[in-house]
Image (cartoon, rainbow, N blue to C red; front, side):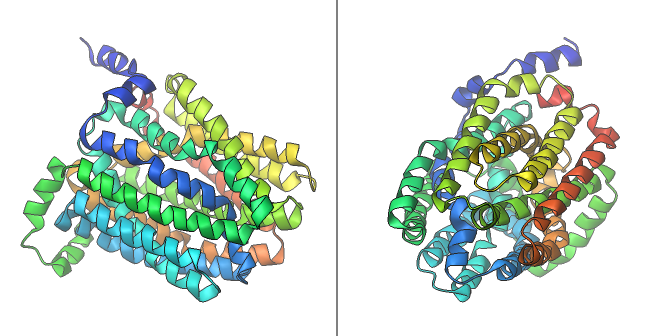
Length: 425
């Protein structure tokens, strides 16, 4: 059997077959993800308007974003080392609890800027568990299934679509602040339960066992100094450098949308606050349909073309948002649909790139350095986007358009992505 026909045989594995045949750590990671994704998706639309109601305004929100990214850089620097020394499994439960359970309680009882300041410091530790959890997910997983596995991870987080109308109802009838406080308490319970179950259902990966053994007698200070060699390795790998540059710009775009969409449509377009829960519902429904029934078809086409198309749709979505007339829900629903399709095309492929272009034996440390560089270069844009929003809430989305257009150009000019089509499917 030729290599080409082998790829074609592997490509016949569909999404549902992947889900039902998952075993070990990938199964535990995917199956428990709704316990994290549901509460997150319920409170996320209200984060900035909740902060605004607590007296935290646009520029301060941007400042908190930059502060959070500074601490995320620190977390990402030590993340690879901690993941290697403690193991993927133990690192995940410890830092999941620190970065999500504790902040959820702080957010639930927040009164002013300083509560959010404390929460953002704890929450920054998610960069450690982001590294360890991804290692736990992929290191014992068949690489031919990676896109489908990451697709199911995203789908698991989108299951909250069925609960979104509940949060919208309570925001409309019991005020936004009271509802969001309760949602944060539910988040604390659900996420903490998820962390415990995941720990019980997983085992340390083969690479994790090897790295624990290799690093057991090495002091953390020496391992930090060894990052020089990892950085040198990255600097000598053009594919990885290109990936980092792409991740920086894509991260800036995600940062703006996540943190300023809610403020823009409620304060500038006069959309009632309870509708903030409706847009994720529409978005998630479209993403689910595309991922469940169309992702396999997308995988038949060029990886590069699908990525570029998705990024252009992100650009188009921001243009639609800027052009939206006041109190026009239909127009915003179209925006949500376009943005959702962009997500289905870009995000699973972005996650797969992080696996393809990183050395297996150094995945934890290389991923740590990648996230350090990505966040480090993004730090000023938290403050910049907040400042732009304080001047005119349209400006952050104009910045987004420039960012996504640049990402399209980057992907189209990346020759090394030309051969990824078969491996993605």
